[in-house]
Image 1 (cartoon, rainbow, N blue to C red):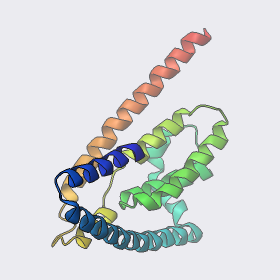
Image 2: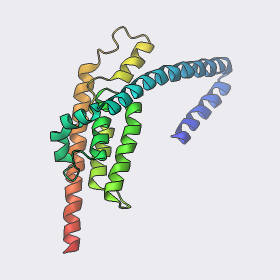
Image 3: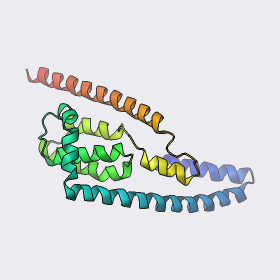
Image 4: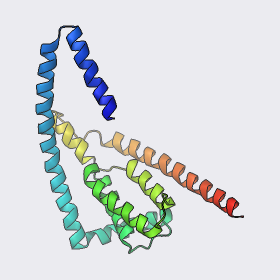
Length: 198
């Protein structure tokens, strides 16, 4: 990605110089830098708020309640995990953050979940549980796209959360397709391992 963005910037400079449009290019650089800082501060505030709320949920025991709530679905996807394990709890909290559309807040929870899954498996390659979790985290279901709504509001949208229905449909479809592919792939891989062992 760094190479792609560097090429875009370089091409923009070359085109601006070739077309004699360096004044607009300079103005765009300054304006976009100011916008980036403002956006960063706005996002930082939202992230601090929700990270704090997640920490309160963790210390108050709400995460155990959330884990119990997601238990029926997650036990089918992660049959080897104990319901009271640290990995199960971290996965539940990550899903909660993703449901609220808090992708950046969900990241540390996702890293903790992967660490716990790796500790349980201990292998050098990704376990089936790790694959399923990465898929769920990437193609996450969002009930309340908080970050996206906040960005739309920042840029002047009169109804920043009018996108709820499309977000629900697209995220549900993405998660369903991704899970079907991941589960099918895991089963095929397990079948091949069994054949090799025989």
